[in-house]
Image (cartoon, rainbow, N blue to C red):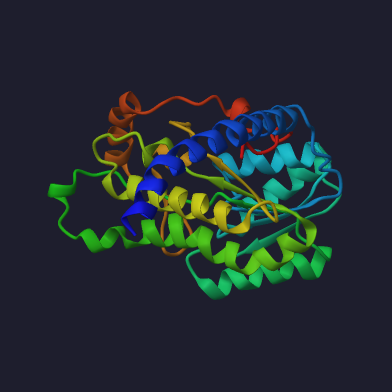
Amino acid sequence: MELIHLVMDIVLPPLLLIFVLMVLPPYVIYKLVITIIRMFTVEDLSGKVVLITGASSGIGEQMAYEYARKGARLALVARREKKLQEVVEKAREFGSPDAIVICADVSISNDCKRFVEETVNHFGRLDHLVNNAGINTAFYFEESEDISSSIPVMDINFWGSVYPTSFALPHLKSTKGKIVVIGSASAWLYGPCLSIYGASKAALENFYQTLRVELGSSVKITIASPGFIESEINQGKYLAADGTVQVDKEKIDVSSLIVTFRIFTPIPVLFQLNIDDYR
Protein backbone atom coordinates (compact mmCIF):
# COMPACT_ATOMS: atom_id res chain seq x y z
CA MET A 1 0.00 0.00 0.00
CA GLU A 2 2.81 2.38 0.85
CA LEU A 3 4.41 1.56 -2.50
CA ILE A 4 1.19 2.45 -4.30
CA HIS A 5 0.97 5.76 -2.45
CA LEU A 6 4.59 6.50 -3.26
CA VAL A 7 4.06 5.79 -6.96
CA MET A 8 0.93 7.96 -7.00
CA ASP A 9 2.75 10.81 -5.26
CA ILE A 10 5.54 10.66 -7.82
CA VAL A 11 3.61 9.90 -11.01
CA LEU A 12 0.24 11.60 -10.53
CA PRO A 13 1.32 15.27 -10.14
CA PRO A 14 3.35 15.33 -13.40
CA LEU A 15 0.51 13.61 -15.26
CA LEU A 16 -2.00 16.15 -13.96
CA LEU A 17 0.30 19.00 -14.91
CA ILE A 18 0.74 17.63 -18.43
CA PHE A 19 -3.02 17.19 -18.75
CA VAL A 20 -3.69 20.78 -17.66
CA LEU A 21 -1.04 22.18 -19.99
CA MET A 22 -2.50 20.23 -22.93
CA VAL A 23 -6.19 20.84 -22.29
CA LEU A 24 -6.38 24.32 -20.72
CA PRO A 25 -4.85 26.44 -23.53
CA PRO A 26 -7.17 25.09 -26.27
CA TYR A 27 -10.16 25.54 -23.97
CA VAL A 28 -9.21 29.13 -23.14
CA ILE A 29 -8.67 29.92 -26.81
CA TYR A 30 -12.03 28.35 -27.69
CA LYS A 31 -13.87 30.42 -25.07
CA LEU A 32 -12.08 33.57 -26.20
CA VAL A 33 -13.05 33.01 -29.83
CA ILE A 34 -16.68 32.32 -28.87
CA THR A 35 -16.79 35.48 -26.75
CA ILE A 36 -15.37 37.62 -29.56
CA ILE A 37 -17.84 36.16 -32.06
CA ARG A 38 -20.75 36.87 -29.72
CA MET A 39 -19.60 40.44 -29.18
CA PHE A 40 -19.95 41.17 -32.88
CA THR A 41 -22.95 38.96 -33.65
CA VAL A 42 -26.19 40.89 -34.01
CA GLU A 43 -29.29 39.06 -32.84
CA ASP A 44 -32.25 39.55 -35.13
CA LEU A 45 -35.01 40.67 -32.77
CA SER A 46 -37.59 41.22 -35.49
CA GLY A 47 -40.76 39.39 -34.47
CA LYS A 48 -39.25 38.12 -31.22
CA VAL A 49 -41.54 38.14 -28.18
CA VAL A 50 -40.14 40.09 -25.24
CA LEU A 51 -41.68 40.32 -21.78
CA ILE A 52 -40.45 43.27 -19.70
CA THR A 53 -41.32 43.83 -16.04
CA GLY A 54 -41.25 47.30 -14.51
CA ALA A 55 -41.86 48.73 -17.97
CA SER A 56 -43.85 51.82 -17.01
CA SER A 57 -40.79 54.03 -16.42
CA GLY A 58 -37.01 54.21 -16.13
CA ILE A 59 -34.81 51.48 -17.54
CA GLY A 60 -37.76 49.20 -18.31
CA GLU A 61 -39.47 51.88 -20.39
CA GLN A 62 -36.31 52.67 -22.35
CA MET A 63 -35.62 48.99 -22.99
CA ALA A 64 -39.14 48.65 -24.37
CA TYR A 65 -38.36 51.41 -26.89
CA GLU A 66 -35.04 49.82 -27.87
CA TYR A 67 -36.67 46.44 -28.45
CA ALA A 68 -39.45 48.19 -30.39
CA ARG A 69 -36.90 49.85 -32.69
CA LYS A 70 -35.61 46.37 -33.50
CA GLY A 71 -39.07 45.10 -34.38
CA ALA A 72 -39.78 42.99 -31.31
CA ARG A 73 -43.27 42.20 -30.07
CA LEU A 74 -43.74 43.33 -26.48
CA ALA A 75 -45.57 42.31 -23.33
CA LEU A 76 -45.13 45.15 -20.86
CA VAL A 77 -45.76 44.53 -17.17
CA ALA A 78 -46.13 47.01 -14.31
CA ARG A 79 -48.70 48.18 -11.77
CA ARG A 80 -49.60 51.49 -13.42
CA GLU A 81 -51.94 50.80 -16.32
CA LYS A 82 -52.12 54.40 -17.56
CA LYS A 83 -48.34 54.71 -17.74
CA LEU A 84 -48.07 51.33 -19.46
CA GLN A 85 -50.60 52.41 -22.10
CA GLU A 86 -48.46 55.47 -22.85
CA VAL A 87 -45.34 53.31 -23.18
CA VAL A 88 -47.16 50.87 -25.47
CA GLU A 89 -48.28 53.69 -27.77
CA LYS A 90 -44.72 55.02 -28.04
CA ALA A 91 -43.34 51.52 -28.57
CA ARG A 92 -45.67 51.04 -31.51
CA GLU A 93 -44.52 54.36 -32.94
CA PHE A 94 -40.92 53.16 -32.61
CA GLY A 95 -41.70 50.05 -34.66
CA SER A 96 -43.10 47.30 -32.46
CA PRO A 97 -45.65 45.35 -34.55
CA ASP A 98 -47.60 44.30 -31.46
CA ALA A 99 -47.46 45.36 -27.82
CA ILE A 100 -49.76 44.52 -24.93
CA VAL A 101 -50.26 45.86 -21.41
CA ILE A 102 -50.44 43.53 -18.41
CA CYS A 103 -51.01 45.03 -14.97
CA ALA A 104 -49.43 42.91 -12.27
CA ASP A 105 -47.41 42.91 -9.07
CA VAL A 106 -44.16 40.96 -9.51
CA SER A 107 -43.94 40.25 -5.78
CA ILE A 108 -47.04 38.04 -6.06
CA SER A 109 -46.35 34.58 -7.46
CA ASN A 110 -49.81 34.13 -9.00
CA ASP A 111 -49.52 37.48 -10.78
CA CYS A 112 -46.22 36.37 -12.30
CA LYS A 113 -47.72 33.09 -13.45
CA ARG A 114 -50.63 35.01 -14.98
CA PHE A 115 -48.58 37.51 -16.99
CA VAL A 116 -46.30 34.80 -18.36
CA GLU A 117 -49.34 32.77 -19.42
CA GLU A 118 -51.05 35.82 -20.94
CA THR A 119 -47.93 36.61 -22.94
CA VAL A 120 -47.62 33.08 -24.32
CA ASN A 121 -51.35 32.82 -25.00
CA HIS A 122 -51.34 36.11 -26.93
CA PHE A 123 -48.13 35.68 -28.92
CA GLY A 124 -47.76 31.89 -28.95
CA ARG A 125 -44.17 31.98 -27.66
CA LEU A 126 -41.66 33.79 -25.45
CA ASP A 127 -38.11 34.67 -26.54
CA HIS A 128 -36.78 37.17 -24.00
CA LEU A 129 -37.69 37.70 -20.35
CA VAL A 130 -36.42 41.04 -19.04
CA ASN A 131 -36.50 41.12 -15.24
CA ASN A 132 -36.28 44.84 -14.57
CA ALA A 133 -38.86 45.61 -11.87
CA GLY A 134 -37.29 46.96 -8.72
CA ILE A 135 -37.61 49.47 -5.90
CA ASN A 136 -35.05 51.30 -3.82
CA THR A 137 -34.70 52.01 -0.13
CA ALA A 138 -32.11 54.31 1.36
CA PHE A 139 -31.46 54.67 5.07
CA TYR A 140 -28.82 54.20 7.71
CA PHE A 141 -29.45 50.72 9.10
CA GLU A 142 -28.99 51.63 12.78
CA GLU A 143 -31.51 54.45 12.44
CA SER A 144 -34.28 52.19 11.13
CA GLU A 145 -37.22 51.99 13.53
CA ASP A 146 -38.93 49.11 11.72
CA ILE A 147 -36.64 46.98 9.58
CA SER A 148 -39.61 44.85 8.47
CA SER A 149 -40.73 47.80 6.34
CA SER A 150 -37.91 46.85 3.96
CA ILE A 151 -39.31 43.38 3.26
CA PRO A 152 -40.95 44.59 -0.01
CA VAL A 153 -37.48 45.45 -1.34
CA MET A 154 -36.48 41.79 -1.27
CA ASP A 155 -39.95 40.69 -2.40
CA ILE A 156 -39.77 42.87 -5.52
CA ASN A 157 -36.06 43.04 -6.33
CA PHE A 158 -35.33 39.35 -5.73
CA TRP A 159 -38.51 37.28 -5.74
CA GLY A 160 -40.00 39.60 -8.35
CA SER A 161 -37.40 38.21 -10.77
CA VAL A 162 -37.29 34.63 -9.49
CA TYR A 163 -41.05 34.06 -9.83
CA PRO A 164 -41.28 35.11 -13.52
CA THR A 165 -38.13 33.14 -14.31
CA SER A 166 -39.61 29.99 -12.81
CA PHE A 167 -42.79 30.24 -14.89
CA ALA A 168 -41.05 31.39 -18.07
CA LEU A 169 -38.24 28.80 -18.18
CA PRO A 170 -40.16 26.06 -20.04
CA HIS A 171 -41.12 28.54 -22.77
CA LEU A 172 -37.62 30.04 -22.98
CA LYS A 173 -36.09 26.58 -23.30
CA SER A 174 -38.36 25.75 -26.23
CA THR A 175 -37.26 28.89 -28.09
CA LYS A 176 -33.64 28.83 -26.87
CA GLY A 177 -34.40 32.23 -25.46
CA LYS A 178 -32.73 34.68 -23.13
CA ILE A 179 -33.16 36.13 -19.66
CA VAL A 180 -32.02 39.72 -19.17
CA VAL A 181 -31.57 40.75 -15.55
CA ILE A 182 -31.20 44.34 -14.38
CA GLY A 183 -29.00 44.09 -11.33
CA SER A 184 -26.96 46.87 -9.78
CA ALA A 185 -23.40 47.85 -9.01
CA SER A 186 -24.65 48.05 -5.41
CA ALA A 187 -24.37 44.26 -5.32
CA TRP A 188 -20.61 44.63 -5.03
CA LEU A 189 -19.96 48.37 -4.66
CA TYR A 190 -20.79 49.24 -1.09
CA GLY A 191 -21.94 52.62 0.14
CA PRO A 192 -23.97 54.16 2.96
CA CYS A 193 -27.75 53.74 3.11
CA LEU A 194 -27.72 50.79 0.69
CA SER A 195 -27.59 47.79 3.03
CA ILE A 196 -30.99 46.29 2.18
CA TYR A 197 -31.08 47.39 -1.46
CA GLY A 198 -27.54 46.13 -2.07
CA ALA A 199 -28.33 42.82 -0.38
CA SER A 200 -31.35 42.31 -2.63
CA LYS A 201 -29.24 42.93 -5.74
CA ALA A 202 -26.41 40.70 -4.47
CA ALA A 203 -28.92 37.88 -3.96
CA LEU A 204 -30.24 38.48 -7.47
CA GLU A 205 -26.79 38.26 -9.06
CA ASN A 206 -25.86 35.13 -7.09
CA PHE A 207 -29.09 33.44 -8.14
CA TYR A 208 -28.62 34.09 -11.86
CA GLN A 209 -24.92 33.24 -11.85
CA THR A 210 -25.88 29.88 -10.33
CA LEU A 211 -28.72 29.47 -12.83
CA ARG A 212 -26.22 30.01 -15.66
CA VAL A 213 -24.29 26.98 -14.46
CA GLU A 214 -27.45 24.88 -14.12
CA LEU A 215 -28.96 25.81 -17.50
CA GLY A 216 -25.79 25.83 -19.58
CA SER A 217 -26.51 26.97 -23.12
CA SER A 218 -30.22 26.05 -23.12
CA VAL A 219 -31.20 29.56 -21.98
CA LYS A 220 -28.81 32.50 -22.17
CA ILE A 221 -28.58 34.89 -19.25
CA THR A 222 -27.39 38.49 -19.41
CA ILE A 223 -26.84 40.33 -16.14
CA ALA A 224 -26.55 44.12 -16.37
CA SER A 225 -25.09 45.86 -13.31
CA PRO A 226 -25.59 49.59 -13.89
CA GLY A 227 -24.42 52.24 -11.50
CA PHE A 228 -26.38 55.39 -10.77
CA ILE A 229 -28.97 56.13 -13.47
CA GLU A 230 -31.32 59.06 -13.11
CA SER A 231 -34.88 57.76 -13.09
CA GLU A 232 -37.95 57.84 -10.88
CA ILE A 233 -36.32 55.50 -8.38
CA ASN A 234 -33.54 58.04 -7.79
CA GLN A 235 -35.75 61.13 -7.75
CA GLY A 236 -37.39 60.34 -4.43
CA LYS A 237 -40.35 58.71 -6.17
CA TYR A 238 -41.75 55.41 -5.03
CA LEU A 239 -44.85 53.33 -5.61
CA ALA A 240 -47.45 53.33 -2.85
CA ALA A 241 -49.68 50.36 -2.06
CA ASP A 242 -52.49 51.82 -4.16
CA GLY A 243 -50.22 52.06 -7.20
CA THR A 244 -49.84 55.83 -7.10
CA VAL A 245 -46.45 57.53 -7.31
CA GLN A 246 -45.37 59.33 -4.15
CA VAL A 247 -42.42 61.68 -3.63
CA ASP A 248 -40.24 61.58 -0.52
CA LYS A 249 -38.03 64.65 -0.07
CA GLU A 250 -35.70 62.76 2.31
CA LYS A 251 -35.06 60.12 -0.35
CA ILE A 252 -34.10 62.83 -2.81
CA ASP A 253 -31.56 64.15 -0.30
CA VAL A 254 -30.16 60.68 0.35
CA SER A 255 -29.91 59.99 -3.38
CA SER A 256 -27.63 63.00 -3.79
CA LEU A 257 -25.35 61.49 -1.16
CA ILE A 258 -25.37 58.03 -2.72
CA VAL A 259 -24.32 59.39 -6.11
CA THR A 260 -20.78 59.91 -4.85
CA PHE A 261 -20.50 56.23 -4.01
CA ARG A 262 -21.94 54.84 -7.23
CA ILE A 263 -20.51 54.18 -10.68
CA PHE A 264 -22.19 56.13 -13.47
CA THR A 265 -23.27 53.94 -16.39
CA PRO A 266 -24.36 55.68 -19.61
CA ILE A 267 -27.81 54.44 -20.58
CA PRO A 268 -26.84 53.96 -24.28
CA VAL A 269 -24.18 51.48 -23.16
CA LEU A 270 -26.71 49.50 -21.14
CA PHE A 271 -29.07 49.27 -24.08
CA GLN A 272 -26.70 47.68 -26.61
CA LEU A 273 -29.07 44.75 -27.04
CA ASN A 274 -27.34 43.51 -30.18
CA ILE A 275 -24.35 42.29 -28.19
CA ASP A 276 -24.74 38.71 -27.04
CA ASP A 277 -23.87 37.31 -23.65
CA TYR A 278 -20.41 37.14 -22.20
CA ARG A 279 -20.43 33.60 -20.86
